[in-house]
Image (cartoon, rainbow, N blue to C red; front, top):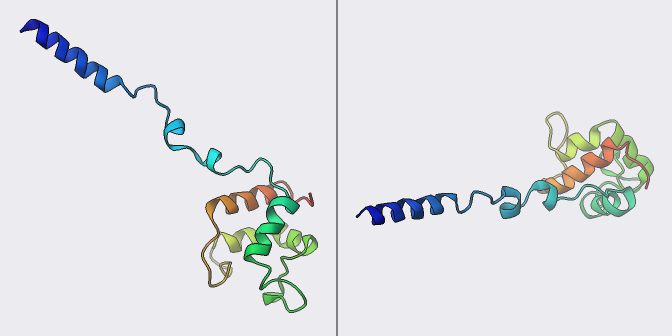
Length: 123
């Protein structure tokens, strides 16, 4: 009887500690591994994102709201004055963009924020 009790306690102890050293990042991933913002550039990241989500309404001489996202010169102005970030994050006080569409994915928003925080460089 004593031998069974000791073995039972050992087995329960092993089961309770079996996942003790597993790291959450390894099991589920993290935002850092899911969204790489280390190499955000205007030409490689931001311009293609604007082309896919914004430029159909915000380019040329008849740009919606007079906001142009298709050129670096125009986009950098709204990036640095905060309009871009507030619009794409759907903050109150500005029209949420893209208008009539879904909010941009969290990773895209993080990339825009990173680019703006770097000073919106033309790279």
